[in-house]
Image (cartoon, rainbow over all chains, first blue to last red):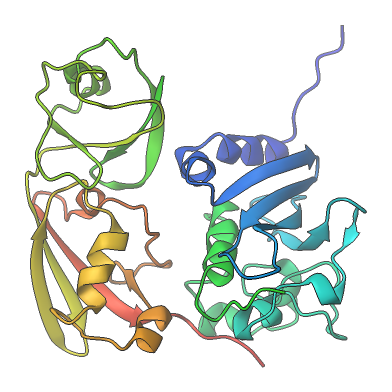
Length: 160
Length: 155
C-alpha cells in the first residue's frame, strides 16, 4: 500500500484546526469548519443577529503554502459553490469594506484586509500601517477568523 | 472528556483529556507545572481533592492552571494608569469591560467599539477569551496592558 505523505502546509493547517484556539471558537459558536478539500477550506463565521440576515457567513480560504504564504479568501455561497452575490453580502461600514463587491481586483474571491494575500499585495502600506492586523508566517488562520468575527459582531454591522 | 486548559505564559488554551471522576489535582500533577486551578470567571480556586464532576467542570469547560491567586492589572491609556485586581481565570472580555468603563478610561460607546487591549509591543490584539492569568509578567503576578485604538487601514 502506498503511504500518502501530507505536505507541510496541509499538515500545519490541520494542526491549527485541532488547536485549542480554533476549537475554543467552535465551542463558543464563533466559527465552524464546513469543508476542507486541500488547499481550499470553507469556514462559517457567526454574525450578530440582524433582521433578515443569516446567523453566519461562509468564508472560502485558499491555503496553499500556509502559513508562509498569506491566505486569501472571500465570502462564499456554499449552496451554489460561488462567490456570494453582492445583495447577500454583509452591510455596514467595515463589513461592506471587508467584503466589497465593487470593481476591486479581489472583490469576488478575497477580503479587503491586511490579513488577506490579495489585500496585502494591492496595498503595500498596510503591513506597517496596520501591523496588528497584517498577516505574517507566525500567525494561524484563527487570527483571520477572529478578525472577521469581530467585524460581523460589531455595532456597525447592519445585516444584509 | 476534554477541557480547555489555560496556563501562565501561553495566550491560547490547550485541549487536555481527563476523566470526569479524576481529581482536579491531576491537572497540576500530570502537566508537571504544579499550582492551583480555577474555573473561568470564578475568583475562588477549586479544591484540588474534588473530582472534576464534583467541581462542576464538564466537557469543554475552560479552566486555569497557575500559581497567582490574584493578578494585578495595570491598563495604560492616554498617559494614565488604571489599576485593578482579578482572579487568574478572568477573561479579557471582562477586563475590557472595566478598562473601557466609567471606573477607568470612561470611553463613550462609540469609542469602546473602536478600542482593544494589547500587551505592550505585541503584534496582535488580545482576544476576548484570553485569561488574564495567562499574561502575567514572568516571576510576578502582574500584567500591564495598553488600551488602544484598533489599527486603521484603507485607501
